[in-house]
Image (cartoon, rainbow, N blue to C red; front, side, top):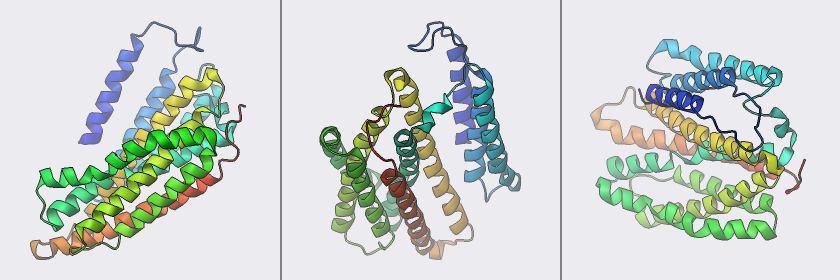
Length: 294
């Protein structure tokens, strides 16, 4: 249901955009690509709904494949239309492309962390919701402190190395969570959350700097929009993956073994997230030389 509501909200935004009459910077005399927007909207809704409800309805098994076909159609339409929604030539820039791929996979691997850990702390460890929420603030607290410093460091040193270091730290932290059980010390959980928060802070700002520093000023608006799409799409994918795995592992669960099955599912969720971080780490390292304007 949540994905249908998201689709309705996006459709509403589509009609709101239609009312906008002011030309944006660099877009004077260009028409809005309504066809491309509709294709993208349907593609995202089908992909996410199909992924999250994979084990519930058999007909949704076809949705991710239909979404892939729509993705190819979207690429084709963007190449042919006079005023594309996204100027695909920007992806010829290796720094820009690899940094965005790293961002997409990063958010796919980390966004649902708070949701999974809240289930762990409440259902497995017996915390109340208020205490669990306060405990989970460790990660964003550390991230908030580190991010500005990491952004400043990336202005002086290599964004690629700083962001990759952060991604590597998150990878280690996520794999570490896969070994936690119902007796793991809360101190260890807190330390690992702080470790992941440190990695998040080291990755996010330098990666954003690399993206915005790789393009000409005329592409700033498009670049920031693409980065936002990567972030939001990654977040949605992250929750969809968790929903899918939880539905698979808990489908046959009964009350007597529910906690053990939850722990088992959490283990594989964190392993999956760790492997996603490995892929993102490779993308981050492969971005090449920063601040190259093409």
